[in-house]
Length: 192
Image (cartoon, rainbow, N blue to C red; front, top):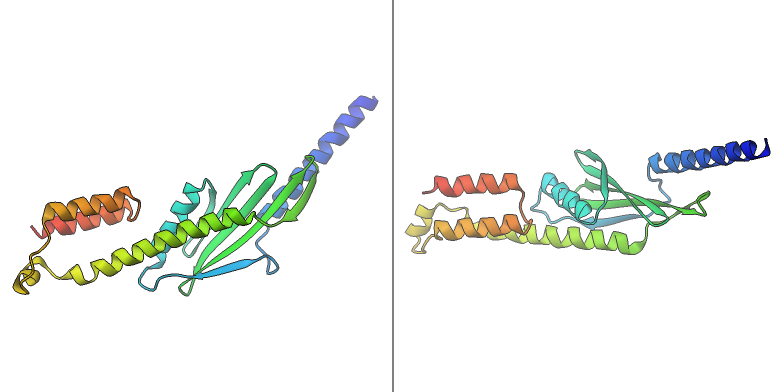
């Protein structure tokens, strides 16, 4: 009888611990938790920024939990740490809100912060990609002239094959999405 009681008590304590972990994970980030803010390059739209964020989270093996028009929430579990992050775009800034729990001896759950290296890796990936896309957009801006206008100005328009190769390289490096690739490819072929 004593063995059955201990088993039931142990099962109940594990259930309570799981419920606590679940409740803390589902709670929104509070004001006490750190919020990191970074500027977004001015010439990038919200959809592009969120695509970059989603790609970085996936690359770093975070699991996307929710996607909103201006934010993405994700989670990751490594060892004893269960972390959540919400990255949102607000007025040309990226806001990183994180929270984490540590489980010790499979019963004690403690609220903690996400390891800084995890956040720094994400920030580095996102910032690098946003800067690359901003440079690509800036380089593309003067080339919006039609090939005919470029010919009139005395400069030789870029070879269609070269443009297609450059476009494919951007796609392969992950600098543009497949939708952007298809749209730009259609524009290049239309100019023929």
